[in-house]
Amino acid sequence: KTHKFWETQPVGQFKDIGDTSLPEGPIELATPLSEVKQEPYNLPSVYEWTTCDMNSDDMCSEVYNLLKNNYVEDDENMFRFNYSKEFLRWALRPPGYYQSWHIGVRAKTSKKLVAFISGIPARIRVRDEVVKMAEINFLCVHKKLRSKRLAPVMIKEVTRRVHLENIWQAAYTAGVILPTPITTCQYWHRSLNPKKLIDVGFSRLGPRMTMSRTIKLYKLPDTPITPGFRKMEPRDVPAVTRLLRNYLSQFGVATDFDENDVEHWLLPREDVVDSYLVESPETHDVTDFCSFYTLPSTILGNPNYTTLKAAYSYYNVATQTSFLQLMNDALIVSKQKGFDVFNALDVMHNESFLKELKFGPGDGQLHYYLYNYRLKSALKPSELGLVLL
Ligand SMILES: COc1cccc(CC(=N)NC(=O)c2cccnc2OC2CCNCC2)c1
Image 1 (cartoon, rainbow, N blue to C red):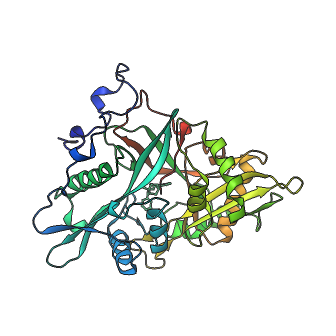
Image 2: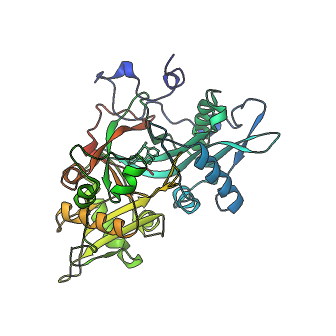
Image 3: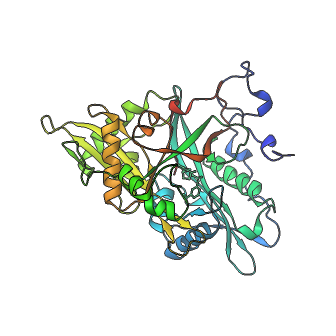
């Protein structure tokens, strides 16, 4: 009952956990394109499929507003992700993207966008295999249409369109447990504006703590302390790519970035993604790198504030600077840019700075999944080098 749909899909099944006789790799073989269902799946008769052209300002606004009002909320329904239009255009149009993977559902009569799901192409290395995958994200069904079983048919439709491009694997995350996580991450938060976070109920005043003591606890310098710490520029793409590829090579599952990918995903974009590096003042080598993306949340039902400005840790590499000092500089610049909180998952080597830099554990978990690819055993979060938006 609970996983009616997922028990029909080529994903690791709970009953198979621990069965080491099952080989690591694709669960179902690729099929000839002629055997892929050519026509879209059937929706309930009052709805119709639509392809969302994110280059169109109107379409982008429709997707933005659907997500703004109906996308993921925290467990206590106090906050809802509020991805910006510019962020969505960035997230959905990487090199080689397919507009056909930006799938909407409209009500036939009103023509209103009532649901959305997206895929983007990505090369993801699993152990020693680089696999072409779709990264599935932004699955959203209007609050008024929940439990009409729209999500399963939307997942089947995006899968069909991914198959039409001869791609047979996918990666996705969810806050809920489905068959079967490849790893489960904890999320952590570092207060930058503790007074606002306490006022809106994101954080609570610690025991035996006053507000002024709390503000002092989270105080940061005005400027980064690492010599040579500066914003990333286009000329840095080759060096950052080398640094990233070398760092990510140690993880069991990781993004396989090339320079083209780094140019899209990591060059700074105002209010979307920020990237900094350390250029050695002596040698001018690029020795370290840190980045975070901008994902505000709507504050639900607070009379004094509407938006929580949150930075999310993205990819970070330290080879000469201490990881602690590098990430503290990331906190310093994010505070200077007006963020209220800096969030991170315990993936890669993040655990080494979380407690030291005064991150507190979040109250939820983020589960990572692969579609049509079995891992012999689950990964630890520290073995994962993949951050989804
Ligand atoms: C603070 O506002 C929120 C609004 C909605 C949900 C949550 C809790 C939550 N679910 N957080 C995360 O999933 C999360 C926490 C730390 C780092 N990345 C995260 O999620 C990313 C990656 C997956 N897609 C959403 C953004 C918080």
